[in-house]
Image (cartoon, rainbow, N blue to C red):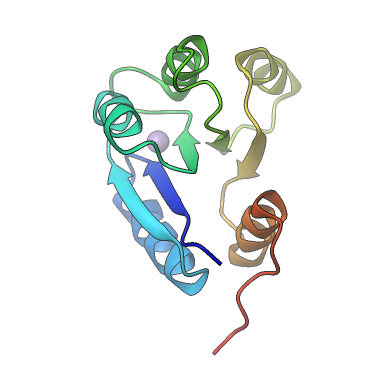
Length: 129
Ligand code: MN
């Protein structure tokens, strides 16, 4: 299977570290951005296969950044999954309008994340070593 590139936009160092470990297990190539501005630049330059987007980011938030991706005809086909600790229905509704391909609820479950990615890419999750 061809290697998939996943861009993680996440400002929390611990979460980023966890994502690094999880994506390594899943044998994905990972790009990292700690803010939305850097993330948007990487989306344009690298065209990742998928974006994991934290909602709460330092300056521009994940909802605004995703709206920008979805409004760009050259980028709008790239699936963006929300990384969010929000469980509120109102937040989910707001996020629905933005056009996320799915949600990853924080705290991140390693198994659930790998299953979500494998489902999306239509492959079985990497076996544990
Ligand atoms: Mn955050």
